[in-house]
Structures are given as C-alpha cells and as structure tokens.
Image 1: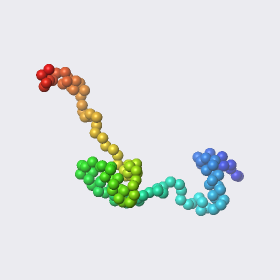
Image 2: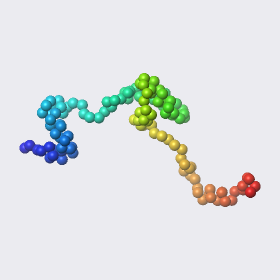
Image 3: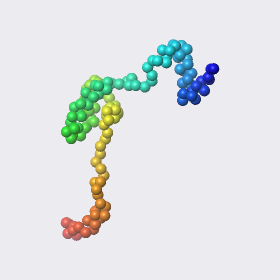
Image 4: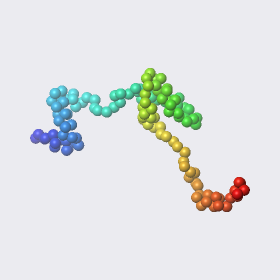
Length: 130
C-alpha cells in the first residue's frame, strides 16, 4: 500500500517537501542515503570541544580562586589559539557551551526588612546638623 508524501509527512511529523527530498535521495543512492550523517553538528567549529576545555582550563582555575573572568582576555587567548580574529559572540557561545553564566550581584540582601529600613531613615540622627 503506497502512501502519499503528505500522508507520510503527517505520520512522521515532516513537511511534504522533506519527505520528497528523502524519497528522491533513497531512489538515487539507496539505503546509504538514509544511514549517512544527519543534519546539525559543529561543521564550522574553530576548536574541538577538547581544545576548548584546554583553553578554558586556566580561566577555570583563576575563577575558582575568586577572580572574575574577563571576556576580552579569553577572546585574546582564543584568537591566539585559532590564529585569526573572531567576534565576541563566538566567545560568549563558547562559554555557554561549557556551562558558564553571567553572575551579577543581588539588588538587595535577601534578609532585608523594609520596615526596619524605613524606621531607621525616619529616626536616625543626621550627621550634617540640619
């Protein structure tokens, strides 16, 4: 029982065009068209994941000691490694891939009591003498 590309697409969750492309490749190349490498992946990577880990190693060590990661320093080290200039977004994506995130200070202490602050502002002596 032959199914139309529309019916196959509905069953597999693919568009009609995708079904037709896969059918065409199958008819042209046989089973190899179905087994080959899929889409996606890091085709335009500058460094492998292992090389990125090695590059980040020194920065991880410094961060564990309490230093702040400066992206411009990491960018310079990255550019030295790949021997060409890269945009900052490349470095930010690298950091995201390896689980780094931006940590910012809290706007206020979690145990703050607004009523106590208000009382203090109203009842404390002013140092200016006014």
